[in-house]
Image 1 (spheres, rainbow, N blue to C red):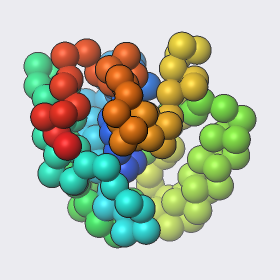
Image 2: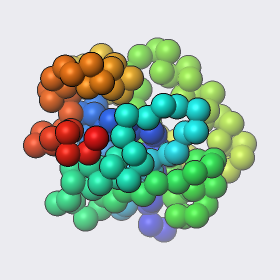
Image 3: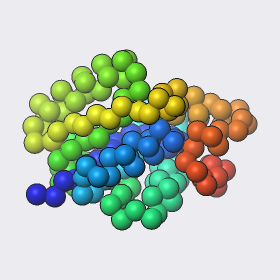
Image 4: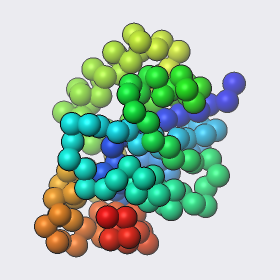
Length: 156
């Protein structure tokens, strides 16, 4: 059976921490789909199409990694793409508690999908999309927190 993982999130913006989790997990799966979720309750910095374009640019040279957007429940997207794993990054103990609760609910809703957690590299622990979004909104230089060679202004 092909090992298909989704890495779901809003990715507004996609950071070096996100990139690291995906790149470190490539050897674990046959296909990784970075799944950009549409969250109606958030005020996004970037459009969904821009986020997908940015992520596709980051992984343009890796045929095992694709990007797609989805609306609704993550478990429904898993069914749609036949994913059998959900990949998540953990930065802190608070992240773990939040992700554990979601993983347990997802397991009840879709028992055949396993959640896989990777700890972030220590240097990425403080990198958080909300903080990076605020830096960008306020005209700061967030380039050190974004994937290499990504000009965020191209996607805003």
